[in-house]
Image (cartoon, rainbow, N blue to C red):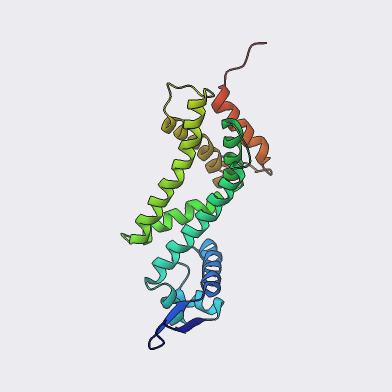
Length: 215
């Protein structure tokens, strides 16, 4: 639906995008793109599911399929980031905050994330939205850097290790586990993951080390 409202002087009309229709478009796009990938979905597929015309899709997303896809990916990442930050805001201390971040990370459908980022890189070229997407992700990463820096400043973490290095170690451990888990590189039967246990284990190994403590 597109609303047509009179301007303040009553002489001209301008159109406004209906937020509910845009939400429905993005929700359908997310479901289809996650299931079939960028190449497997057409604008007509999305229009048919939303029950709007293809022209209406281009009204909401003038850049076409690329713009819609990037908008969907950004929304998908934003939702996960918002949920993570909300969870972190309810706890105090570096260890507790990092554990909440790790729990959110391991709860994520990461195979979907890898596929989405791959398609952005492969099919979206130099689209301005692509640059904005990765710029926004760098901003979100700053939040994680702040957690580590606060830990350094409070004396919870070693001060001779930069916050950015802590981030690389933290993300590296989690990415390795997620890669093995979702792509099953060892061809093992995957049992359900105890997310809280996994998150606590990663944070404990990072902050306490992996050497066996003497009694």
